[in-house]
Length: 336
Picture (spheres, rainbow, N blue to C red):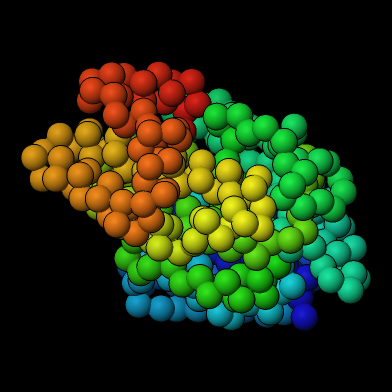
């Protein structure tokens, strides 16, 4: 068994995938790198095959018909042989110095009778537009350099959420969660860092800036204009998250995890609501009402919390005020 599997979904990634792969190779032969070519039409398949030939004990390639980012992640999970699993998008990369420290710690976990379920590290927004960086750390949220559980979580700042960039799951836990990310859908990384959490019992936080998240291309999925065009997919992911987890059951096992997951779902509802507002069409207005009605029908208790007491209660503000608040947050946190 390998120590870790890195899954790299690739779609027309020829211009930048080399940098990503080279940083992952720094993990050595204890790592497995699965390059999932998602029906690319450029030179991505040939580049992936070349790497598999050059590093046959480390790199595997899966060529599949286009299924979207989520199906790339699914394929990685299905074929992973590593004890741990991490997704690295083909335009992002890992810090090689931090990666070596992380590998050392994962090696320690592998010797345990019950290896740690979830490792968390920091991630860095690399903004191409103004050549700046924004580091998201979890100092103050989690204890550092020791194993802990959800009840030891501290206070979350508005900018702090677990994203796909910050997590390394134990692979079997992902398989046990039954998570299947929807095909041809963007923003499924939110499902990835939400649905498996109730199965996580042991956590370890390393205050290392491991993941480098490239942000700023005009065609990137988190660019505002792209998100408006794909708002239906954002809503689809939000509904999937509503269906995936019984928050009341989570509450009965861990109040702190419940509060975090409630906050995360509230954020997703707010994002969907904001981008439907930005769309501005009558059809988008109907979709806003339908989304909230869906939550009300699926989970009346969650609806009352989200609509009136959680972060997403801000969606009750008039549209111009809501969008003004969004613009302020966008300038402060530079999330797209």
